[in-house]
Amino acid sequence: MSAASVAATLAVSLVGLEGHLVEVQTHVGRGLVAFTLVGLPDASVREARERVRAALQSCGTEVRDRHMTVNLSPAGLPKHGSGFDLAIAMSVLAANGGICAAAAADAVMLGELGLDGALRPVPGILPSLIEAAREGVRRAVVPAACVAEARLVPGIEVLGFDHLAEVVTWAGGRAERPRLLGPPGGPAEPRDIAPAQVGPSLDLVDVRGQALGRRALEVAAAGGHHLFLIGEPGAGKTMLASRLATVLPELDDQTAVEVTALHSVAGAFDPSGGLIRTPPVERPHHSATMQALIGGGGGVPRPGAVSLAHGGVLILDEAAEFPAKALDALRQPLEQGTVTIHRALATARYPAAFQLVLATNPCPCGYRDSRRGSCTCTALQRRRYLSRLSGPLLDRIDIQVAMRAPTRADLALDRADTSARVRERVTRARRRAARRWAGTPWALNSRLPGTWIREHAPLEPSLAADLDRWVDRGRISLRGADRVLRLMWTLADLDGRDRPDDRDLGEAMTLRTGDRDERAA
Image (cartoon, rainbow, N blue to C red; front, side, top):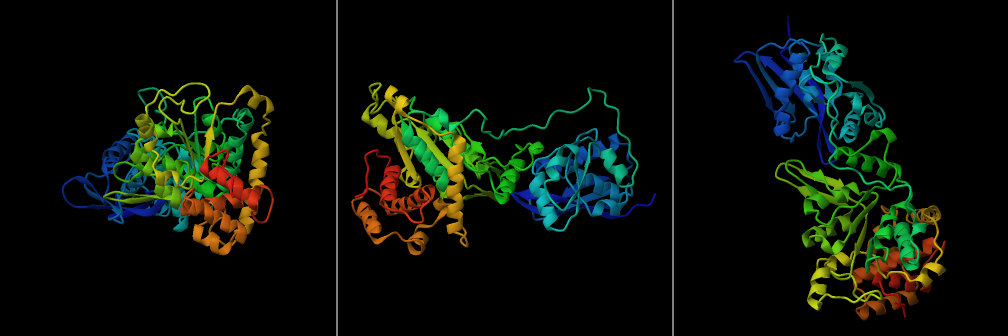
């Protein structure tokens, strides 16, 4: 049997969300029997040699005992994960004459091999095939379990197979599926990160007696502003925070693709529902580390909670219990909307444009300034408790709301709108803002740079003078004044007005400072 000395297939290496097309080259030559894998593979890729060898033998395919070298090109690009298994196996077969080399040369191949030759799903199919399509590849071979996700990428013919033997037959070779000695089927693909979903039972109408809190939530949703809720236990902080996503509009096409790709890389995407259109919600526990929040890990960094919340909401309940370093690490993503994680072998960049909701008690016992109980904390305990929420972090939060447990009168007099009605108002406000800022890189008021908004969307002179007086009195910082400006535009959008007025300044100051009695002079 004659065999080509060199053959190649295609795969994709992901660094963050950025994909790189990889040529999997196999050379069969003289020398001692060996199977060498080069091209900067990590441990999981190096182990592909054993998986591929066992899978080929299980399928009965003939591979000569010769010196084989598999190169993952470009060699300087880090390779990680088990998704190279299928491409390596088909490249080895092509170089040994076991299949038609031309059939496998123009298709990108992604999938993990079991020792019996079964094809198992791998994370990151969507961003991998997006890059392949960008590079001009028009055919993809993936595990059958990944077909639904792969077909979300337009312009690529997707072929799904359950077993290596089926791929070999498709490529013109001969192979047989082995008989399994154990029970049929393999273990389910592990999902170590489960995306939080907004349950259908959650509705803003359930939050009663907190008119100011609901108004703050609506303003936050309309302008994409961050929110800080502080108050005693039972005030409704967690209920309010968990309902922010219910009043947000569906994701646009670009954001939906980004969000879906992020969850695909994290192994937390169910492709049966298509692209993720509902804003995601992430609620990490207060024991979460900086790596869990921001992202990280050995080798190529994985996305953290801030990236999995991209386009949606990141809720930090009991915020004062989080490690101070982890909280301060949020400052860069809050400002830039992206997170860059540097490691020795790779630098990964992930989008992280989320809405942050901090919720906390005012002290360890929770009853400082409460009408229902007496605080048992010392002054030192109170200072230490809230000191984890640093000034620079809180200065990046647009809206601060002090909440108290509602009284019976509050519950009797309060009338709350449903999430659907609030979402309609939020959607109209966002459309108004998008039309006004058309032609700029921003669509949400919260994203506007302070210098730009002062120059291109200035306030009336009297309003600007009032705002400057608050800065001179030290009530807000210069950064805080910019955030008041953004809030004023959001309030005007909610009311359907073209420009902010003095009422918007007063309400924006109330929302910014968290003081129920605050009014602009």
